[in-house]
Every structure is written in structure tokens, then in C-alpha cells.
Image (cartoon, rainbow, N blue to C red):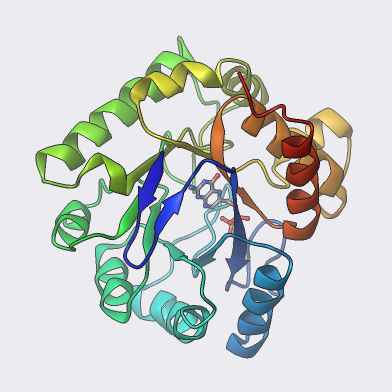
Amino acid sequence: MFWQTTRFRIDLTRPQVMGIVNVTPDSFSDGGRLTESSAAIRHCEQLVAEGADMLDIGGESTRPGSMPVSVDEELARVLPVLDAALTLGRPVSIDTNKPEVMRAVLARGADIINDINALQAPGALDVVAGHASCGVCLMHMRGDPATMQQRPHYDDVLREVGGFLDERLRACRARGVVDERIVLDPGIGFGKSVEHNLDLLRRQRELLALGRPLLLGWSRKSTLGTITGRDVSQRLVASVAAALAAVQSGARIVRVHDVAATVDALKVWAAADLARG
Ligand code: HH2
């Protein structure tokens, strides 16, 4: 399986580690650390040195209860970091749901659009379809970040998330975005209770029937806090365990804050040859 992106055709035979770079004052686990572009750029360099296969730069927090930022503000946060990250020899993803931001970052050379809203905003699919080869991650979210954790309900979370991702995949195909450019993400924590997230993990393999690689983002999320009783600053071990569980259940890309630890864990996992089956 491959993931076609602007500059790279990524071989997903080995599970890939996507390192998170949040250039925001308010992200749930690392907000405020990287608001200076220079600090964010150093962080990109550090994650690459730690073995990140790709970077995901975000200029707007989407934590539960967060509020949107303007296009200008998001671009001011993201563009300087993107320009520097593009020199590091790894695919660079931009985490955004705004078509104006997508257009600007693709014009600068971004490799991937990671959209928690699965290109549903008016114009978003047009931007991606108008680009020759950028990669895209389509993620499932129920509701929006401001309200999504207010008593989310599903009759069958797997079926509903899978049905949504299938519909968005078809919408992309209908606009000429070829399958090889697309990966899918069930959206851990986005309008889901602890039980919903764990159901998605237990039955994750069912989503492979959609025919595209899965990207999973468990890193430091509150379900891990519920399971371990640990505060967000102390969820490294839980996050690595969740990343391994996701890969064991068929994920090909894991989106993580703690790159070095995840890379080590995946090396041992691969050496143990658990990759089969
Ligand atoms: N999770 C977050 C943001 N973007 N994108 C994808 N594809 N999958 C995810 O699970 C995902 C995502 C939330 O995590 P984080 O970026 O650390 O926090 P914040 O949104 O507060 O910046």
C-alpha cells in the first residue's frame, strides 16, 4: 500500500509515525509551547531527528470546547513553520479544515491535507481535487469541537463511522481524487465517549474493508487518561501502548506527540515480527 502525496509516494509497508507540531496557544496537551515560529521549527527538526516519518503542523486547536481561529491567524501561525519543515526531507502535512488555508499551504508546497472535517467545508474538496497529487487524510468527527463531547450517541459506532468515511471516500473519487492519495481516520475522541473509542479500537479491522490505509491518533487523549487515571502530561506510556494496539489492528500511520518513544516501540514490534496477520 502506498500513500501518494505532493512530493513523496509513501510506502506504508512499515507503519509510519506522524509527528505532531501544534503551533497553537491552546492545544489540549502541548498548547502554548510552540507559539513562536522559531520554537516550532526547532521542534520539527527534533521530531525528524527522533525518527518521524512525516510531520503534521496545526495552527488551530480542535480540542473539545475549542473555538475556531481566523484564516489570517491560522496562516500566520502555520506558514513560517511549513516553509522550514519543507526543507527537512520528510512529507509535511497541514492539519486544517479551512479551504483558504488548504489553498495557501498547497501553493507553498505542502504534501498532505489532514482534515478533521473530511473536506466537508464548502470549497475544501475543490481545493484538493484541483491539486495534482497532494495526499489527504479524511477524518470522522461527530458535531464540531465546540460541542462534540456533549453526550455523543451512536447505535453502532463502527457502522456509522465506516459509513461516513465511505461516503467521503466516494465524494473524493467522484471529483477525481484517486484512492492512492487518500487515507482514512475514525477520529478518536472527536464526538465519541470512552466506550465509543474503545469499540473503534476493538473493531478497527472492520474499517480496512473500506480499502484505504488507516491513520489513528490516540496520542495523550482523554480516553487514555480514563483508563490509566493519568493526567495529560503523564500519558506517554499509555500513548505508545495505544499506538501499538492500533498498528496491531491494522493502522499504517500513527499520529503522535512522543515520536522517539513510539519509533522505538514500533521497531521492537517489527523485530518481533508481529506485523504479520
Ligand atoms: N487529533 C487531533 C488533531 N488532529 N487529525 C487526525 N487525522 N486524527 C486525530 O486523531 C487528530 C487530528 C487532536 O490532537 P492535538 O493536535 O494534539 O490537539 P489539539 O487539537 O488541541 O491541537
